[in-house]
Image: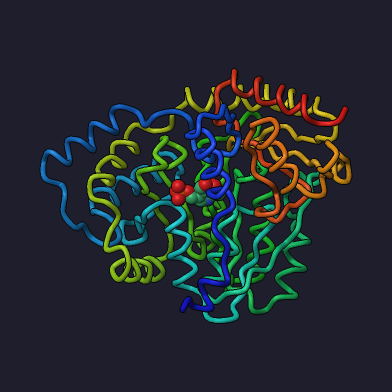
Length: 396
Ligand SMILES: Cc1ncc(COP(=O)(O)O)c(C=O)c1O
């Protein structure tokens, strides 16, 4: 009954773990969640108020498929003000979240067999969304030793070996690793990409506001006007303004790609929710939430100190986003009780959930089976309690 296409993909592993930990909590268990991919801060009041006002004013009808003119204007203004990038409203496509924006891109550009270069560890949805669009993900492996960053040479070799590459995905700050490419490193990557002008550069910048000192955010679209023209940026209200449930994201791309994605939306979702778009305008006008960012930076530093002291964990300094991605493979092969041998990150994550009641995401779904992902979108108290519980159930 089901299509070959739908059978090609897996449910999102991060959403699966969250469902499991939520169910345990609903059953009365005291589960500490380090699996969450969303800020634990509420959406600011001014944003909620703008949405409520829109509802009261009757802003409850279909909108343009690619977003209301007002929101696209507000995005153009935000991109100019904060990102120092000039776009026109016909280059902006609003979608139901960054995830939907990425889905639209792959559906709009890929023919069967076209390849997409994806550095690993990657955000879980890239490969599956490529598969859904009949494309082929080509994974470029990185390790913690290189701070999970690809080298220009690695990218050059990969592109030379893959003449069918249609797109390259870069995600900085990164989910799951928290790595942030320096402006110089990104410029070197742009120089390699200049040799391959037919490759669309997809830059996922949904964590653009979450960059910790001394790291700096840099968008590859800033490299040059020509480079901007062959780049598609993906941004979102979700993380920057604590609006994950609102489902508003957008792309900045060539007008040709924007038109294609708008056509796709007109035949699929019709439009992002009208009153959520009104809230998004208020969010963009409000600007980055510096208090929230400072709190994430503080928690990230404290959590790293605690993780470092867990025998068998190897964890790098946080650079951005709100995740740690320690290497835990030194624990593989160890017996933790009579029946349980820690054979993989997946087994370790299940063991921690069962015995310590701590939810973390195993690295397999991110293309990094030696790692576990810990989100620090949780209170300091819970971070301390959670790590303490882990210490108690792991071998010395
Ligand atoms: C790297 C990355 N890109 C895109 C998204 C999509 O976010 P949203 O669809 O909530 O805008 C996420 C969400 O976790 C993410 O981590």
